[in-house]
Length: 360
Ligand code: AMP
Image (cartoon, rainbow, N blue to C red; front, side, top):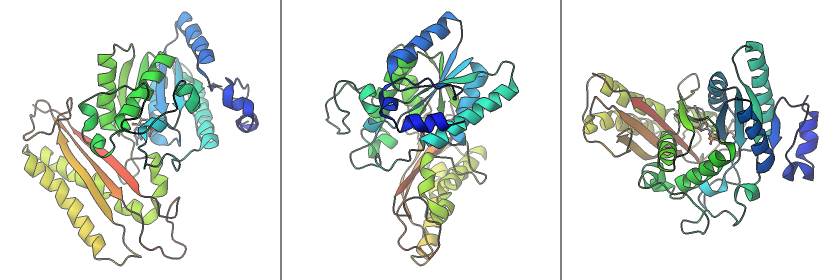
């Protein structure tokens, strides 16, 4: 079924042409004009387009957004583009997982699933997989803080939380999303709650620039024990995977404090920080071949709209508890140990959040 995909993906033609491959149940576009043509026709046919932007390495988190898009639109467009401008100069752009063949296979399986559901369920009809040159047509993309280029900056939101340690990250995200929104002209675009600050930045982008696309947020999809799914989890390996659950456990402890009636920042954050420091002490007591160490970047208790830190939660608004933890490389591995892609040498930044819902 995918023979055609593989043949094309190694051919130079694949790089520059819009690809219509009959073996696919969707069209793959490498360039903008043919996609726009398809979009125009869908509009004339009174179809609706739900758009799911991704960087590939698809997992259930992405697929749940696509499923949601298919229930609310006749056509789903998925983009797969590892966006260089959201990676800082010392970040993991080159090692970011790229898994085109398995991504396409997953999307085909989804379309089979949608076909079986029949009825009102939409279909994935387009994949946009552009080259960096297509997305950044005039200047090579810059990841320097003061680099030149046509960028969208959303401040002060972009400087907070994730932005504090990743200064170009949200400039890159806002810029690529602005481009993708202009290209796809979707009725709705779907983003995961997992990247909560991204959802706030994107909603602000859409509001401030009058972008005619509704933003829909899908729930965070988690592994059976609660770890939020992420494309980067493949680098963890078993030991760091088990210890990395600390971020979820810490946020859950904070949520329990909120649910038991606590509203003061100190009480909520103490609950989370208590878990994070207890688990770290336990790990530090182990030998280098047994332990997995981490650094807590931040644990934040913030207003859901502005992401300003809050001293006391206003129960009518609720709050967002979020955090980032860097799993540092393993110090020593054991023979035959599953250390993950990159042999446990790649630092992995885990982020997660929980929404404290407003309560009467
Ligand atoms: P990425 O490919 O990491 O840029 O993610 C593409 C989209 O999938 C973003 O809107 C993410 O927030 C969303 N996403 C990633 N992981 C998850 C998850 N575990 N649950 C729900 N959405 C997710």
